[in-house]
Amino acid sequence: MDEVGRILAFDTQLLLQMAVQLLNAAFLAFVLSKVLYNPVKKVLHERKERISRTLLESKEALEHAEDYKMYYDEQIADIEARRRDVLDSAKARAAKMEEKIISEARKEAHDIVERTLREMAKAKEDSKEEIRRNIVEISAIIAERYIQERMDEQTGNRLLDEAIDGLGDATWLN
Image (cartoon, rainbow, N blue to C red; front, top):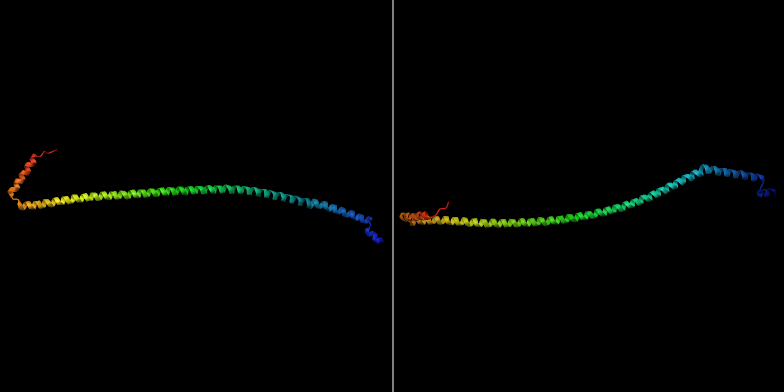
């Protein structure tokens, strides 16, 4: 029974071993806390702070990015509006230029028609004058031939004297 009692009994050797093991454990815990736990805790704390800063910087960067996105969206909308205004203005100017060109072309065509009509009227008058002159010349030639055949020298001298007498009575203007 001695052995059975000894298994459950707390003798001095057991208590001493337990005290040494407890001291070893405490010393080991102290050394590990100074050598490992505190530096690891410090590294983890620094890492946690760095991650927190990175998250905060990321949030700020995201907010700035969203602000820039809104700003650029507004700029793009403004540019699009200006583009539409410029296009509308260009279309209006093009329409005005087209209207002006068509109007000028119509005026020029009208002027050409008027000029052509005037030239045709002048050509017609010139042709009439030319025909009248030709008729007068032909009539004079016919009259001359007729007179040459019908008139004798005595009748010619009488007509010449009458013409000279008629000229003497005429008043000349200077």
